[in-house]
Length: 133
Image (cartoon, rainbow, N blue to C red; front, side, top):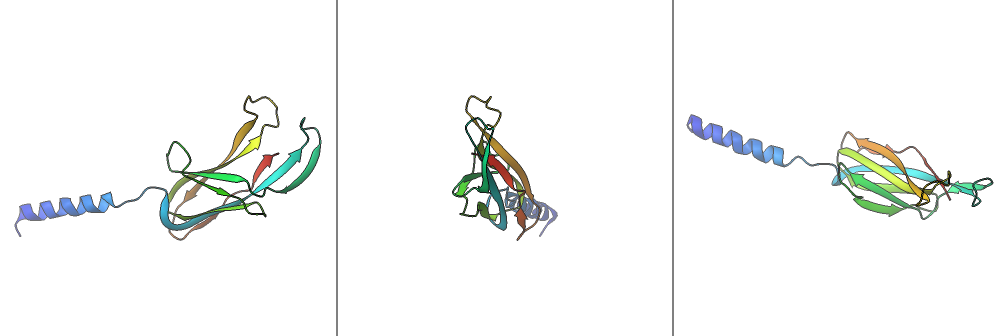
């Protein structure tokens, strides 16, 4: 092989290597999980009626810099959610809660947690999310 062939081979191998790098998302072997706790108040948010695991609650994940949610799961009867088969990267986890200030027109807001997976086969536990019902 001559010098030009070596340079071309190096460039092709470099392109192949860097094009294989993967962004945050599914296809990996890491897991993110957590728990949602529901605080159940009366309509005026003046009386706490109960605190319990938020069963059957929607939880969303956003992969990296995506603009909308990438996947949705529902919590178990214990309020636990889990997103499996994730790659290294940054993630946003969120669930919706009633607005306890009674000031938002939608009457709901997102409770958000930022999560980073740094390694393969990593299991990341997210801080509990408190929502109002």
